[in-house]
Image (cartoon, rainbow, N blue to C red; front, side, top):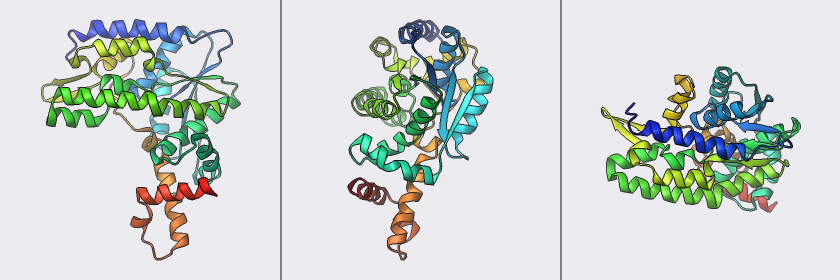
Length: 293
């Protein structure tokens, strides 16, 4: 990795994260971490481990074959932290969809897919007496973690990427974080998102672009500063170099919701093909039927 001058910035990021996380800890806080086994949640969990004297649980939600569950198991073992699997299947999702839709208050396919694993993680966490869940959400928007940024920098250049990152950060604060807080609140669990604290946001804005996305010998490295911090924290390479996985795909929520919608429409019309039954529009219509029933 091309680490100069970003190593110093990564040390500063570490200091700021410690400050932000510390101010969200108290004697009444019973914590857990929403954990995918990826870079962002592993950094948060590792810093928490240095600050929290008592053991805490990691929570990963997904279907039996979910990639997130497989990788979270490996990462939790590497971090020597206990992991709780918050499993769900089609029947469980179908039963909870009306509740999830009522919490969201509107039909939005992406938001429902994101809400599904969060709903089950919060439900499991509350059964452990957890009242606060930490999340690594926001690191991708701040430090250039999404694959689409890599494509855009090649095609349109740095400024175009910065513009899209700013737009994504706005969406995060205006839509995604309120959704996450509402879902966790349903189980009486508070959400803490250290990367979305103003001090971290301001710091990220001041960073050189090459500490976010760097091109090294023809290879584009995203979230450079966070990978350097992970190395500083002695995280194993499997975590330092972990690729980004969207929650709805890594958990299997997208697959479950698509299957439920397709089964519903084929039952209504047996002549309908699987391809036509599994479109975004059909999923949206299926959810609309549920929210109006």
